[in-house]
Structures are given as structure tokens and as C-alpha cells.
Length: 212
Image (cartoon, rainbow, N blue to C red):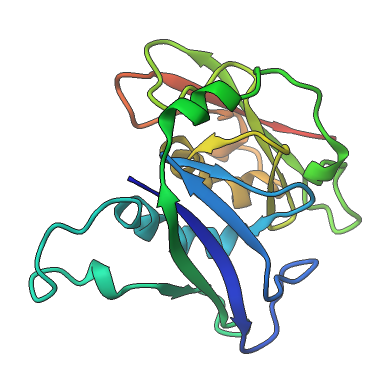
């Protein structure tokens, strides 16, 4: 299994993220976890286009080149046609699981100001915190209660030196843009704030909460 580095290489239009993504912005994927450097973030919209490629790109392509197309995929672009933000996906080395386990920080560490946390803006878009509420089984990504990421406008932040499981993240992603905005009475999503990770072995429950 490989560790990945995902880097913005080009912006061929006007990125509408606030602040906009720019060449050199990057994050890492290691053993199914996403890690963002201190002070960095990734656009939620762009991440939804990248996630389907990250899991296979972490792995060795065993098939012949004429039998599989994944070996030639190194770039993906944000779905925003106005932005045309291009990301490069690179395999930067083999995963050392022993090192990952030894350096994993304890859950519940103090949240850093660099994660972009803050109250809702004047436009009414809420800042959200998505936190591991409980682990009912064996999480293969080593997620623990208290592990979290934050979402401010369209920007996703993870605390420095922490990670978040891509499998669990993908379960929460479709709900987050709506949960950031006012919901009318009777909307089923208004009272729904918990999401179950797809992995039946882990039974990891995520809690979505406003940071107001």
C-alpha cells in the first residue's frame, strides 16, 4: 500500500472557495486516512471528486496496462466548471504501519486554532464539527471517540497531526452542505445529526453539530 500526496497543480479559472485553492495546496492519504498539514484545508466540493480515486491509487495495480485504466490516472479536477482546479495524485512511498501506530496522537487533544473553527459567517452558513461519538466495534482506521474534523463554508479542516478515515468521511459528506444552511420545519434532515460509518466491523457513529 502506498502513501499519497494530493496537490493543486493548476487553477484554470476562478476558484470559488473562500479563500480559493491555489497551486501548492496539498494533503496526504495514508492507510485509508486523510491528513491535512497545519493551517491547510481542502475544498469539500473538490474532495467529492477525488475520493473515488484515492482508495485504488493507494494500492498496487496488478493488472496489465491494457486491462486496467487506473495506472494512467494521475490528475483529477474539481467539479466546479468556473474553477477548473486540477489536482495531482502521487504515490510518495510505502506505508509503514508500525510508524503510523506509534505516532498516532491520543484522541481528544485540544483543538487547534489552525483548523479553521469559528462561528457562522454573516452569510448565515454554519460552521460544523463532525466528531466520532462512539465506536461500537473494531475500527480498522483506529478512530476513537473525540476524533473530528471541522467545516467552515466549503473548507474542510483536520487538526494538525491528526487524521480522519476516508470511509467514514464519505458517509457524512452528502449531508454537510445542507446541514450548514437553514432547514425548514418538517425537513427530515433538521433533526438528523448522526451518521454511521459504512464499515460494519467498526460501527463508528459520527455526530454532526453546529459550532455556533
